[in-house]
Image (cartoon, rainbow, N blue to C red; front, side, top):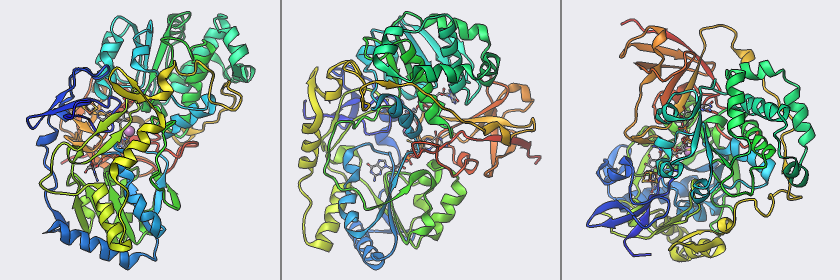
Length: 587
Ligand SMILES: Nc1nc2c(c(=O)[nH]1)N[C@H]1C(S)=C(S)[C@@H](COP(=O)(O)OP(=O)(O)OC[C@H]3O[C@@H](n4cnc5c(=O)[nH]c(N)nc54)[C@H](O)[C@@H]3O)O[C@H]1N2
Ligand SMILES: Nc1nc2c(c(=O)[nH]1)N[C@H]1C(S)=C(S)[C@@H](COP(=O)(O)OP(=O)(O)OC[C@H]3O[C@@H](n4cnc5c(=O)[nH]c(N)nc54)[C@H](O)[C@@H]3O)O[C@H]1N2
Ligand code: SF4
Ligand SMILES: [Mo]
């Protein structure tokens, strides 16, 4: 790799390879997947306003002073309950570096996910390990089913790989890809589990299942059949709001073809999220779609699968989606904006306010940094050494240091400062941490490093379960609807936006509603859920179903409506496990 190449650090499927030249970021034309172009966020990355100074009680202080305050406060609270909270603003593995220090002081870390944990848990139950289909394999598919993933916005570098395929889109929103698709299923939000069962049932009725694959490579098929036969077919159709004839058409399109299902996080932002991925996997397994060229189900992978790192983890754990900051005396928040990105913002705000001393370590001023006692600016990915993997393709991204930074400090240097101050010792060299990750699980592919797991077609040697076989879904429970009996109740979506990356960059705070409700752009409304209230300005959006509203991730109000609970499996936040009622605010 040339020395001026690096990788986009942002939490995104694409993990773009970047060339840094003459102070500018450009796409790397040699990279097989990301092919020489960057998205608008990365093109403007160097222009966004940054934290330029450390702050203590709201006043600017010198970085060295800030580090001294940090050390004093750790010393002061070292025998109390303390937490290290980190997010995904930068996906570099060395973001974990401070754990090397905090592990020596009994700090707590969060376990679980704000993102893909529920789906990941479902996939692991069926397949034993959550692997993607590499884009080079997607290229060999005949039919691509885009299921709750907004490819053009959240995963745009995959678009060229979908050329000339039959496209099916399953989404409550008629986005641009849906408009051009061969088949569009405008599904009821949270209906994906039922659709997967409905289509499985149709395939079974029409005897289109792959009996050889089922017999030799799977367990529990009979239980799966019993499960989808236990719900009347009409009810399955109602629960996803997809007419039977459309479901038949979909079943026909995916029979005896090379089919890839590209599944996004939206289908699993629910309490039953793990069941949804298991049901989609079971549908695919019925068709024998695993371990074959151009076939399979690709969700967000566990991209670190097979890799090893010796960076410490912390002795105490708490569930991420429901973390209660008020329990901790010293709170260290890094690489995240929990006040906007965590569910139930009201309780997060109260918790952070109650914690005795809060440090914010990040790149940008934001809702969370404004609540912190001490703010420490980080340096960006160009000014530190790191490495990342990504959940959208098999390549590893090296992120060497390419320039000095005028302000801020890296996670490695901050940790090293604390190690010296408290223990008079140094961390091992950062290149050693990186080298051990690389050597644990990589191979050379087209001039780049890739995860060894993808040397072969995923699952071509069997599944990663105890007996090497796929486990069909065999049980299910769901009592969501019983909480919502009156009609003034709408589903509400929170989806990714082109111009923001979660709560970073240019966020959109509008509430999008369907035209049929008779509102106008700019009207002010109050939404109420079982968990909270929030006010929004409205925009009319013709792409929406009549029973469904939409907001974008990073909307500063949305999480005032969401529940502080974890998914049934996978310890995942459930950002769409709610319905809302709407009231116009008369001014
Ligand atoms: N530009 C941009 N790209 C990003 C991000 C970003 O913030 N901005 N964030 C990154 C991150 S952290 C992640 S996790 C990924 C996630 O990216 P995606 O997996 O694409 O997830 P979402 O944007 O949440 O939703 C995708 C689609 O699902 C639809 N949808 C919503 N609810 C349902 C449902 O119940 N069923 C079905 N079938 N569809 C539904 C939405 O309308 C939307 O079109 O994107 C990454 N890429
Ligand atoms: N309403 C709603 N909430 C959501 C979602 C949603 O769709 N809707 N999506 C969820 C998902 S999928 C995810 S992944 C999470 C993401 O949630 P977060 O991980 O909180 O991500 P961001 O909100 O983008 O905040 C990232 C912060 O990291 C900091 N940062 C960036 N680079 C660096 C660095 O190199 N070093 C340090 N120290 N800091 C850095 C920046 O200051 C930035 O403010 O949000 C979840 N929350
Ligand atoms: S945010 Fe995603 S699409 Fe944009 S440059 Fe980074 S990896 Fe590529
Ligand atoms: Mo995410």
